[in-house]
Image 1 (cartoon, helix red, strand yellow):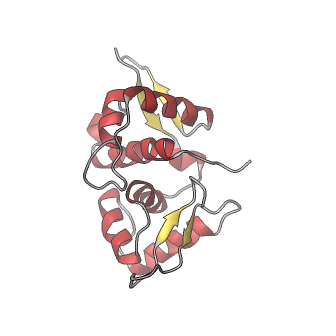
Image 2: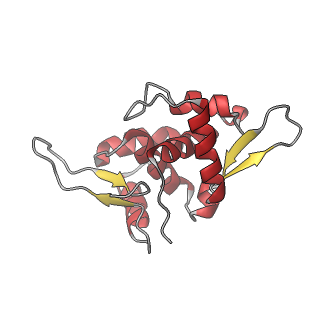
Length: 164
């Protein structure tokens, strides 16, 4: 059965991935920290206003898919970590590209390269194209090229974890 996430689950998962790379000292994360990361107003499209309950429900659903795990070792508050790269068999640069698409919505190649760089994404156009090919060339494709829209100069790439 193909993996199908809700928009909330995709945002929570991508926020965990992003924060594990950009702020590893605060990882694993509490539900409150995940909620703040998911509701961040910068680097997000669309901006969301998730509640703690919605984030907790998304984490429970993601745990059923084995994409996140609860980490209770020595902490007073339960914390969460992602298993995204191991569960989906993603290399670090490919995971960075997919997380960027999940956080920011459809992107052109140049936007995607610039926005995935802080997440250790591919640094070259060839590397980015290889990562996109890896995401698209799977039994269940994880991304695809969208047709160029009216008034758009370039076509955009989008993730498919929430469906078409």
